[in-house]
Image (cartoon, rainbow, N blue to C red):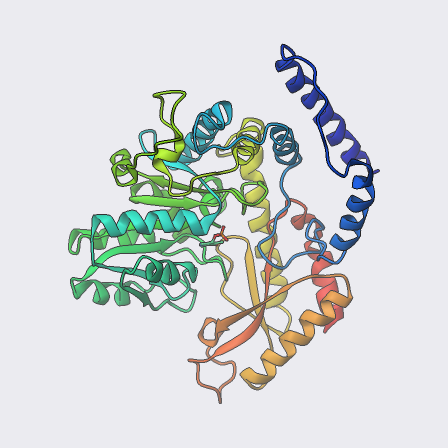
Length: 447
Ligand SMILES: *Cc1c(COP(=O)(O)O)cnc(C)c1O
């Protein structure tokens, strides 16, 4: 067994002993475990099956938005599993519900919020669903707007909620286009604007500071989808435009952040925050069978989901206790290093004539195309580089991006309105900065 795993396993065993002692007043009993004798062999089979996954944990996995949970999160989750608390109600998870409240308060504090309403969800999709559901209650029948680069979940959620939806074009860097937004607002039928701080494809940051100013002329509700980018509020090496956007995040009506993306958590852990605590009124319901043990707030009273993993809250609470969400702390340095790695890979790619660099990374995502006479040939080569890199042990991702994200001089005979298949790399692991030169070396070899 590798050394760090041994250390983590010992740490978990000690914590499990400690937890067992908390319940030592109970009479002894023998747990009944059906199939116990075959467990080890089934587990070995599962391990073998899992070998077919990409090596997500390794720095040479530099593809999709996948980041290993911190060992403390894994251990705390496993520790909580001996109780399997349900944070729907205090009856199902008294201690873990309180830990959820504290952990969510830590996330809200990143945005300067002390009085707010918020809770964890199974992920960013459900958190955004709650944001748009409340938006729909506040401005019934009015339109939801999000940029063309916003996560597809917003148009889909709008259709689930039967709210009209329209998308707003972006600039060539993937950020919501202000003039286009302003003309959409002029129609007078917009209820909510979704501002993405960190798009999923390229990490573009919508100009929140300037979008907020449009509210003076056309009032609208503002929801920030920072499922991927939210923690960059703590980073101190953003460029000035992105920094200005993050500086204003606290002025949003609601914010979504995914601890299971950049917050070192296992899936599924999302978070929804509302600036106005009175939004709790939309959740009001009567449950005849859950809320008995206390008149204290049960999280199920302010959440659309019923059963939720209390273990997620325990893992998040423990991670934030170890690595507080503060500027200049160890956690924020990890984000800064990812951005540094992305800028470095971007400049290596920009200086290689065989590639066409995409927009300068605003967070930690790098995109680039392969130089070729046409969009079709470039797309074809991207697929081949992707496959070739995998053969050299380097795992990248592909993204279909608007051709206008790349310099105008490329593909002169093709319309700039089409899409090109490009390569994409999310450098979100703390090790990526140290590995970026090796990543670039293998990328060149793959060509
Ligand atoms: C990932 C993501 C989502 C969806 O969140 P899940 O946790 O995958 O459900 C929504 N918006 C943005 C910007 C994202 O990056």
